[in-house]
Length: 263
Picture (spheres, rainbow, N blue to C red):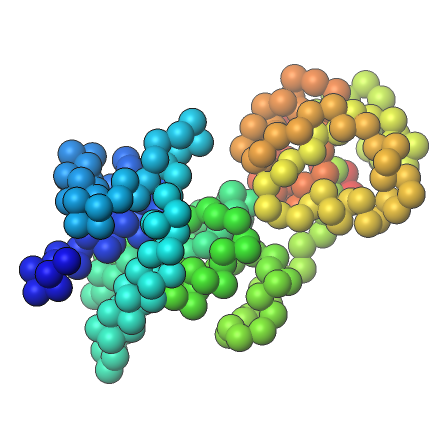
């Protein structure tokens, strides 16, 4: 590789595909067409003499060589980013900066409606990129540069980062308004006898439920496992299932006439 002729924009392409696992999504993040992304990946493959990413049913999987490059590439991008931001005063009214946030779908539901309204008022030219990834990768993403901020319940991030407690989030139970067995109150017996929706999104709700129920957790009837909260209200509205969700999520969904929320 000739460092004098190397196009460092290719590192951004590599990093975006690595994080998104999808060429089209990575291109959208960088503002590049799929054709431009494919051409950039082809150049990288020729330079590295390695496929770098292999297409699978679950997206673009990095090769072993690409995995060894991931850390140094993230460090390089982070170093350049920090260098360019030195001694630059941030003026929200004129800034065109793109902020990369690590958030779950729950955090997006809670924060984005208010955040975007606020940014439209004080920072109209700022852009936001929201990325979902396994929380075990949060530390590297924040330390090495691709991410600017992580929002959520992050007990594993208690050291080495500036943190601010925003609020405590209780849990509530969500169900259809005309549920035949549950009225204005929900007893423990009704809770245990009902069919539940278990959401595996990284909001740690299911783990909290199991700790609260202790020995009774094994008797909880899980009728449906799903990865995200977005389809929960549609499922509840057409069934007798119930779902335990963060209160802010339940409040947002509870505005739908078909649903009701109980503590």
